[in-house]
Length: 180
Image 1 (cartoon, rainbow, N blue to C red):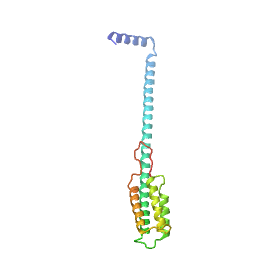
Image 2 (image 1 turned 30 degrees about the horizontal axis):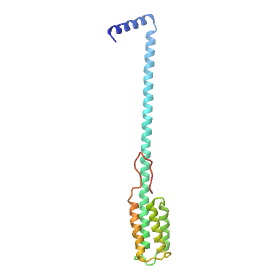
Image 3 (image 1 turned 180 degrees about the horizontal axis):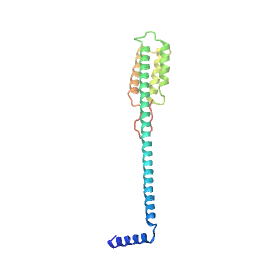
Image 4 (image 1 turned 120 degrees about the vertical axis):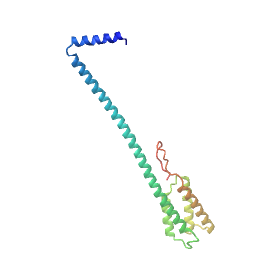
């Protein structure tokens, strides 16, 4: 805009004001409407931004709570698993127990069977070795002491692999899934 255009605009505005006595009131009304509109747009924008932020933070907190709970369950699962495995190995060890307590062995085996997931190959393999050890320790399968020790060795190695493997995918962008 040139200076000439600005002067013409001022002259037209002053001419409108002199010809229309309500022009000042109309200008004030339009100004107020404009300011209220800007304020409403700002409030709406702030509402949308706040809502998005609250939703995002609540999802993050929910995801973290789920991971924490999954971690607690995993720790409890591992503790019980190690305890049951140690009990089974102790009860079925021919050097410690010449006459194994079948009731305790069967109870421990059942608990371990319920804990292990047959869909996970390593747990399925461990379950197989546990069942063989149970059959031999209870006298239902005739094996020598060396074979029992081999079963126990396999159970120890597989048990270690299960206990010391990561169990929760902690990438927050993926679905949370447990391997236990």
